[in-house]
Image (cartoon, rainbow, N blue to C red; front, top):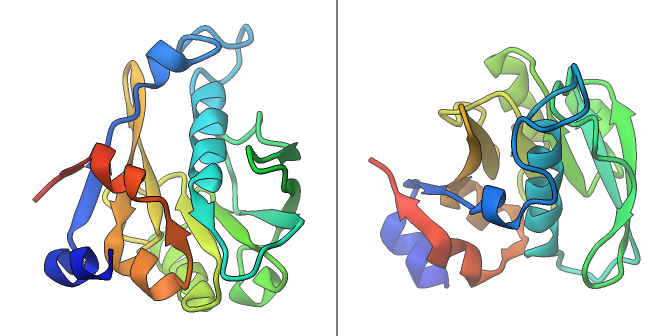
Length: 179
């Protein structure tokens, strides 16, 4: 897998997960007046966490939400497929507030602040997911990409390789290269 990282370098991969086919609720059929992306975001984030392995096995993962997370209303505490408990915590959008976070979900904040957060987690075994950064200027490991009827994500291989985390190779298999 490291050879793939060396070959592709910082190329961002775009992955389209068939969320609508496997979804509990079709995109746009959310709670009346609610966010049509909230359910798809929750399913996608939980799947990303399920495909991630931390250097040391942990019984509890802390899911930190930094900034205004517009589409994260359906993400609370949950258990992964492997049985790990994931607890949600809202934190300030500052690098100093990320101590103890295993996952950082970056809401809608300026790109410079997003980059500060991703830089603060580099090499510390923290999974980073950007909610409002479709071109992945934040350098998060994953950046959500919203389309009118679907949700996909970009995978930043360079950020993954610097993180110390292992992302299941199946994520690479379902990804498409975007130039």
